[in-house]
Image 1: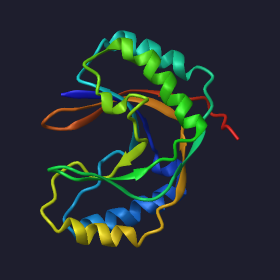
Image 2 (image 1 turned 120 degrees about the vertical axis):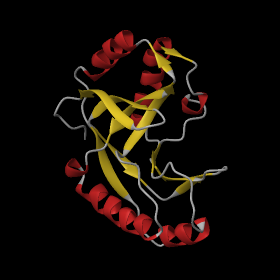
Image 3 (image 1 turned 180 degrees about the vertical axis):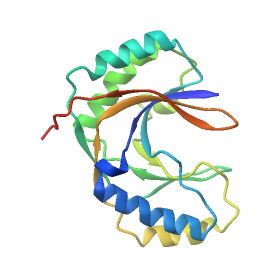
Length: 182
């Protein structure tokens, strides 16, 4: 089992992203692939958190925090035995600052945190798939590359999600204020 601190991306609050997600879903289904159930940006990942301390820290981090806009541009692939497609999120000063702040506040609550998410290594992204491919990855990649995947999303929450062998789930969601940054 593992846990992650993420920002969930509500399709209803992000119409341009919703259109991109719908196009991706059509392509993935043509190849028998599934998109992740809940699109999100992961900030911090660990198999163990002190949940009481984590939730207290996340509550404090959201107090008075305005929603921010993040840009998505292009397509990426994490290589390996199970390649993972993702949408890169531009590492703007605002996105970088949120990540740096979360890492500093959340790390003391974690045991064996994933260093891929450390400020030095983190690649902001939205994962598209987690399951192994049984089709030609090249064909899928070629079709995905023909899409214009540029859009913007509003980051308006932190949430704790978890995954075990059986399923994914969402724990507590900590919403930002309704005000949006310019």
